Length: 232
Image 1 (spheres, rainbow, N blue to C red):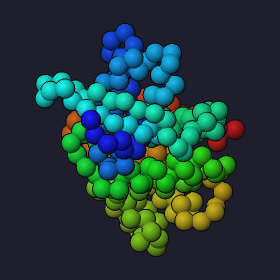
Image 2: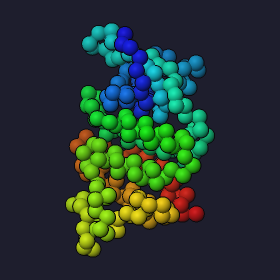
Image 3: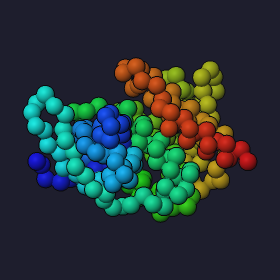
Image 4: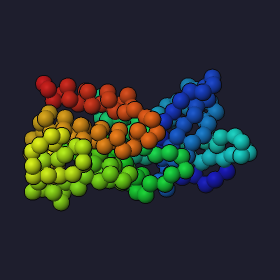
């Protein structure tokens, strides 16, 4: 049995009766997966919720068997997020994205810190959608696909195909929402649409395609409810 460490639960699946297969992003920037025996029982299922912080330990009986994981809820606690349908959808969106961009055995430096910083702001901030938009660009950077908008403020357009900023308006370009990301300019649905479009194109064509993955359903749900909200 290893010493306990801290992590964020990013994936759960019922596999047999009340047992769960789970994946945790540890504070060491690694994915730990394994079985929680009885994890979906009435006594334990409130612990194993996607997006929850866990203090956990794991062990392996032999090399041919998955880890056995034992965990308890750790702070920060997510109660205020669970009661807010928009924040909850955002939380589940993030967990679903992280679950497909990191494979077990891969270590992505500082990705835990990136998520932890945002989730703490999501808990405490009332206006957070701008922070989310910045976060998805930070995520692209940390997994190897940087969109350096801060160094390209003088270039109005972004070419989605080449993933480069440009001063020319031609095919496959959009007006990049610089002012929305770097200032307190009021949010607008057009800026959100462009940000989602860029994020999805880069993720699908540079990362998910290699593993034959699609954009996860919780992310798509979050995008829809946020865009619907700002249509009002």
